[in-house]
Image 1 (cartoon, helix red, strand yellow):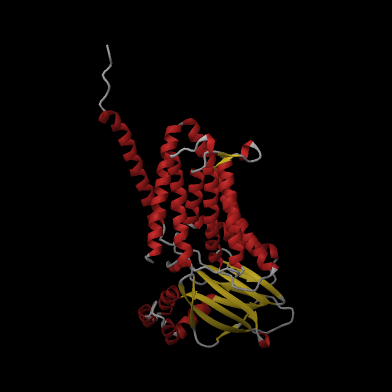
Image 2 (cartoon, helix red, strand yellow):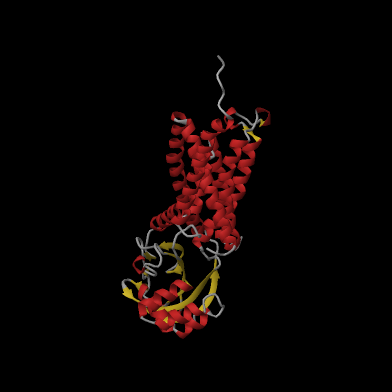
Length: 413
């Protein structure tokens, strides 16, 4: 007796249900990731930039760069200057922001000098404003420049200490403000990174402490940057073998290290308006690459001979490496933008940048060491479940990348 085959519609129903479930999961992943952080993908954080030099008569000159809109709301609330908030917001992104700053200079200077201090051998140096407040732009964001002279005793062999508590977490406007300091003081020059956990820098500080701060800054930047994390996740999900993830991660590391170093020392400058959309697009492309690979498996005839079996690559592998390398170059520009260091090239600067990069790489390797073995184990124990998990994750990350790309291109973030 012949078995009556099921109608095509009945056979297709389970597959359609699976696809619908996967699509729903992808949309859920995308929704969670989009709602987790704003379009910048780095959270509500801020960076303060300070250039400190020894001035005449034993004084210390500090040129501070502060995010304009954040400075307006923080100083207005702290100093009880409602007019500063009204005038500052009215002139935001008009090109006349300096008018509001100078009309309310007393409130702005009081706010800054209460939270940014200079001492010499423990004795406070008295701040005085130098010139008017001016405006500039960093990564497409308006910044206010304030120059202060701190009158110190000017004792010989004195140790100078800088402390920054600008835009603290308890104001609830931003979290984890970084103050990037470049200095030429007490016969020393270099860079330092300050935050709530390490608010002070001293010229008597050992070099290992300064480098530890840059290591932590690099590690925190990767952990706090959802766009870079999603790019890394897309690389891991799209790698079925250890060889694949090692090659992809190494390619990404080499590429972003190149542009990170040359951009951080000022040899290349690309506007954030270009870098940020491309980073978002890179997330979508790399995540979608895995989905495309599931539809179009490479054949054995596509193999391109390379020394050693372990490194035998096909055209799809080489194409993926090339794409990762190109996008890695762009991510390096994004990493450099996070530092915003603006000082002449020096060996001290180079070491600071390298340590920052090592912090990024350490976190990257830890994430790979945790996530990839878990995916491998799932693929061995439940290959079908692992397949659909990979599809859902990749589809979700692709949607997030496309969403950010459109948002950044249109300037809605």
